[in-house]
Length: 529
Image (cartoon, rainbow, N blue to C red; front, side, top):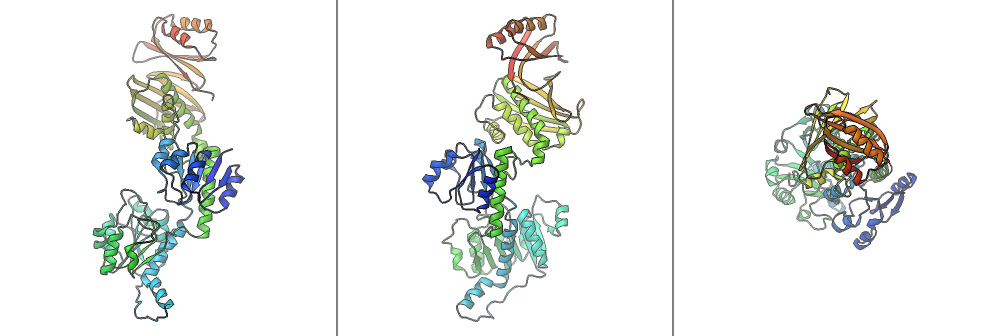
């Protein structure tokens, strides 16, 4: 039974989901660093929010973990690169708190426009300063939204409900998508900043977005504009916001996130025209329950069935995709295993070709499985999560190509590997869309199931070779289950694939290699179908 540790406080519904799915779960939030490190190695999965940081020594101690689930969107507290290298899937819940976070951003916009926090504090202090709190009407104004993804799209919709004209910058949405959303798309952040009365940020914190809104960008904004950040601290340069709000260039700013959290001290706190909340974008009962249930379901699916959803370091597969791709994934992995056992390590380039139906499916998981099969023959602890990174770490170039047609098959996958030993190529297809078959080796067409014990030979195409091979196997009491032959079209050589019922000894393989006219003998164990 898989075992999961819930390391941070979250809805008890997560515990219920894990138990209902047959997962052994421990709810242990609030432990010290030493206590966390002492138990981390006991679990197959760890569920966190933002309090537990899974990096460095703690991540190293979690040497059994297969999946880490973040009940929320941001994974800043998880070393995803190290997780990928270790073969650990990292999941988040990008949809569980989208409405909640979007609503907070809109609330900040309205509050800043009408100076609600300041007016509330003044009234609570017994003052009646009606003339001081002259607000800005939002109807008819221009709103700029940076990032029109899950949260940004909802913000756009809500701002349209306030009868604002909405403009977006997002290089990943098409003109058609923007039109369907009822917003206007612009070509740059600078263009957006210069034209709007309200600017709100909804992008992740990555290298490209760090200090995206800096002093130069704020200087281009309209005098009297409002700036809101409910995305991630570090996207907005807080010193630049301080200067612009203090000088009056910006009418107001509102922040839910900060470069340093918890933000107990910040120069911005001095300013009356900046309002704050303590990173509560996801803090509603509905959102907390949603993300807890979702992460528990996702982690359970992966631990029990291998289904990957909302992963940040490996392609996600729904249950339906997993079912449809299953025979392709098996074929791809067996092709990798075959070359990994019949070609010496020292690979420099791996090229995956997809033809026919295979060109139109989700190819990334197939490439990962090819790499997993190939590299696992010479390395330990390789899986579909870390195979790509391990190849990159070793300077192996990974390429792919795809075309909609195939000369001989409805669907075809071809794996070419180049390295110190030269190159090797194997091709595979699916019979009846479900039965994997290997159909060519290098330039020779030979069809056989990718299973069992396979002896792979290359020989000069001349009489007597097959008889000699059969005699040696018979003398060793090794039964032949299948024997497939093919001629190489570009040479006078032939290829033989022999499926045997027992593992041949090194001595038997050496005798086969000594047969006159035999050029190469390799052996591969591919397991059962």
